[in-house]
Image (cartoon, rainbow, N blue to C red; front, top):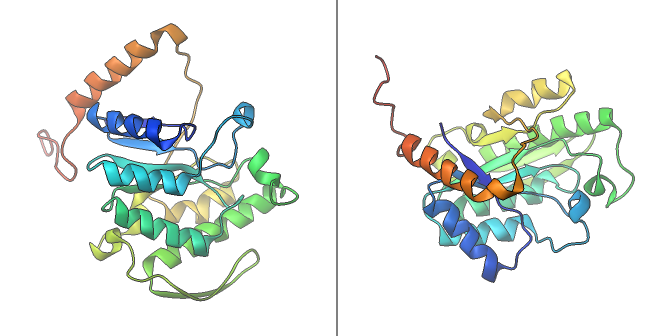
Length: 233
């Protein structure tokens, strides 16, 4: 079992830096931050951009996986976002985990204009994932679709995952979505699925939860790429 943690992008880097370092020191396998422009009840509180935050975290850590939770087409375009992904993959040495979602119905959905319907979000997400996957797995891309256009979009030198002959899609996760059509075509291009739920943890038990997570992570963590000692038995 591998355990991860979410670190909200609310603190200035002079403070946030220590949070990311501690996540690695505590033995977490991966750490994520929300890829939103604002978040529900926290909309009037400090909230920093995801890409520069993950770049900074990647520069000060060395082993922990770092990811977006989750990037969506509500305000992301596949072409410039693919460049961001390639840059983050490079800074982190291939540790980037790309979490993708169709986008919710909150602030992010309407900040750039009228929010799309659920059906439109599903269609847009399918094209978003397909185009992003194409951009990240080939050097030059041309695309004309319902939602996006890309002309001679170049992605050089490409991602570390690709250079290592690994499928980039295996390093992506996708948030759950209600539409079977959306989970079909888009899901085939992603490596994993993530589920969310409500955790009922008393506020006073926060320290105990962290200590327990540390023990479980230390006990279950193995170097990346190694097999279980019980494999094949």
